[in-house]
Each structure stands twice: as structure tokens, then as C-alpha cells.
Image 1 (tube, helix red, strand yellow):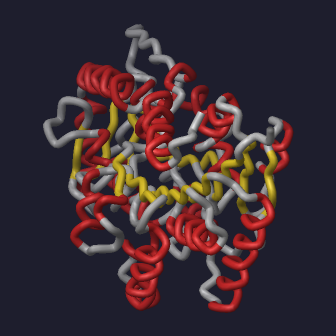
Image 2 (cartoon, rainbow, N blue to C red; image 1 turned 180 degrees about the vertical axis):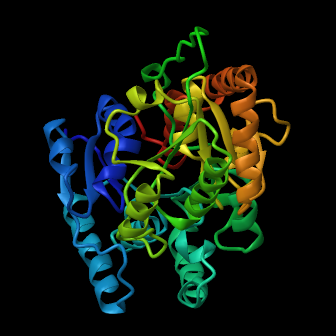
Length: 383
């Protein structure tokens, strides 16, 4: 008897490798043949080395060409016709919509979309995004509603937005907080109290997009450098060429030249980097549920983030598990960093509280179990 097939479809192989590899491994343990789809990239061969079927999809993340997009949906439809998967699970708005539409055309029994945050179309203020929004809303409703369909969202704010905007049937929505983190990989940093305090080491780790709060981070660094604060500002991540909100590399290099930030680029070993960090900041405008904050919390690192959807799920407004600041407020960000620089004991206290919360709510085993529960709900023959 052939193994049932499940397709995991994302807009980058990097995402599949870094965010959904544990889910793929768990599905394989349950006897599924796991097929991974994404545009071509450097992580695809790594996925193959781990024994998974990974295929490059003819997809351009930035494309708005109707013929090209229709061609992609038809490619997916033919692929699903040939492979006959039991489940198609798409991540990010485009993959969720196109994967589910193609799954409908191919009569795939279970079609699931997972959307982390609202994406460029729903968060950007530019004209192109505003024009696309009605079309994307109609496509999402057609793709992600009805029998055998589910839409997984990562925070209550997104659930409320999707319900109030009537984007999909309410009974199709499931709330699962984040993609999960393997918390066992992260340990609490030991703190030595010998001699003068070391410079406060602050990190922002994210794709270099304006809506991650990059401008506010640089502004805060400039303010505190003017005060001659003994603070290091690290920036980890690369510009995302496929996203209209990407920060240009030349700008980042200019900030480095000014002495405002230390740009680390892509970091492959986050546990090692976090072992050197005192404060993690993410002044984002909106998130699904930010993995970088959870990884830092697992290390007992103090968190500063915005009172924005997704971020407030990790750091509450109470101030018990971190510092919450308004969105787009550089002065508030600088003030929060200043506070923790002056009170290292408070930073340590907030970090340990954040770790306790992460262990209880955000371990990847919890997230995977909840994801498999959605599969079982929609697929009665799930192993």
C-alpha cells in the first residue's frame, strides 16, 4: 500500500527549512510521503539530503502578471493531479491561496492555508497594495472556504480582522500561535558580575524590511550614540529582494559606515549569537507571531517590541515579560533600551519571565500537535 502524500508549499525553501522542517519530520514519522514545494534556492538541496522530495516551483514571489500567476496555478493543478496528495498545506498568502485553489481543481481532500501576519497587500499603504486588496480578498474566500478547507492564523488580532472583513468563512479559521521553536536548542546565558559592566548588546534579527521597524531601530541607535551610551546595536538579516518593503543594501552599509549598527548579515547559528546578546528588539508594525522574539525569550533575553498584532502575544502590555512600546515610535524604543542599560537586573528579570512564558506556550511540540489536530479534523483517516 502506498504512503499517503502531504504537500507543504512555501514561497522560499529557506522558510521550509527554518520554520517547517520539524513538521515535515513528524509527518514522515506518521507514515506520510512529504513533498516540499518552493521556488529554487540554496536550501532545497539540504532538504533533499534529509530525505525529502523537494521540487522547485516556477514561481516569482513579486509577480503580479495575471498570465504568469495563472500559469503557476495550472502548474500546481497538474502536479496535484499527478501526485494525488491527501493534504496540501500552503504557507504565506500567495502559497495558501494558490495551493488551495489548485487543490480544489484537483479534488485534493484537505486544503490548508497558514498565514503569518497580513502580508504586504494588507499592511502596506501604497497604491499598488490598495488596488490588489479586493482581488486578494476574493481569491482567499474562494480558495480557503468550504468543506475540507481551513485557514490557520497565528494571533487573535488576525482572526478578528479576517472575521470582520468576511475574508473567509468563520468556521474555516483555526488559531495556532506561531510556527513553534525547538526551545531545547536555546539555553539561558550565564551572567558574570565582575568589574565594570560590559556594553549592553542589543540585537534586531529579521528580514530587512521597513515594516520590521528597521528605521526606528536605526533612529534609536543614533539617539543613544549621541548620548555616548555604551551600547552595541547588532542587525542580523538580509534584504528580501522579493518583498516591495525591502531595505536597500546601500542604506544598511551607510548605517554601518556611520557607526550606528553592526550588520551581521545572515546568521546560521542563532543560539551562538544569542549567547552574546542582552536585549532583543523587534519594533515591527505587524507580525504573525515572531520567531526571533521566542528564540531570544528561550535564552532568557530581555525583549522590547511593539504593541502590535503578533508582537503583543509574546510581550504583554503588563510589562511582566518584556517592554511593550507604541508602533513607529523611535523615542519610545530608545527610552526602553536606555532603561535596560541603566538597570541590568531588570533586564535579567524580564528575560527570565519571557523564558518561562516561551516554555509554556511556544515550544514547537505544542504547535505541531495543534497542527496535526487540524489535519485529523479534516482527514478522518489520518494515521
